Amino acid sequence: MENLKRNVEELYRNVRGEMWKMRHTLLKWLHLMIPLLGILVFLSYYSFSGWSDQGKVYGYMEVLSIVLPLIVSVVSAMSVELEEKGHFQALFTVTVYKRSPLIAKWMVLWSMGFAAILLAVLGFGVCFGIQTGRTVLSVGEYLVLAVVLWLGSMNLYLLHLFLNLAFSKTISLCMGTAQLAVSALFLTGLGEGRWQFFPCAWGGRWSGYLLQYWKGNESVSGEYVANSLVVGAVVTILFWCGALLWFHYYEGRQ
Image (cartoon, rainbow, N blue to C red; front, side, top):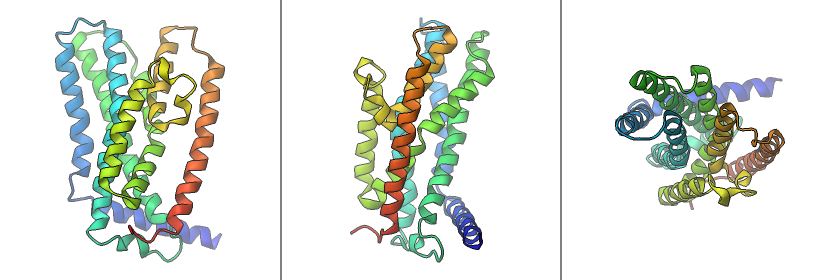
């Protein structure tokens, strides 16, 4: 119990340290400006587009899920660049739980990601309703979609932290670009039977199934979605175990 208490205290100190390091960076502003810019661009386009209201909302959610991996790679690279300035020494100054700096960095980025996704989804829903005077989804449904996209990004942040720490920003950005393409392709029939094993496709697929379900599409199989959640859970557990084991022996870029 005493060890657990010390681990939690050290994790808390590392989280505070991460927030302190980011206070004068562009990271927090990017999490604000990117959602606002996206909302502005889509609302401007939708003001003259001939799409149906439902098609506009679905299209926005699809694009949001597609670009998310690339955005995650960018903010993860910026976060790790803060460590490069100190030659990664801040990652090795722990005395109790060596993995806590990685977990703290992930927690801060994932939390900021939740705020950005929430702003992007709810902000669009509210502004689109004001623009059209019609409601496609309720506030609660927009909130559920935001949570689904956020949960789907859980492994993406850890993956890109690993790529930046182990290799370089270039590798992470290339992977983010590849994941953007994969997530787009896997929204089509090309993803059937495969998308469950690719975390970059989870947010788009799961949010798409929710939209179809709310639309009343009875072709959406509850068993199929449940099986995808099980596969996702197994992939997540294996990935996290591997990543934490790797970081336990991490000594900086070689």
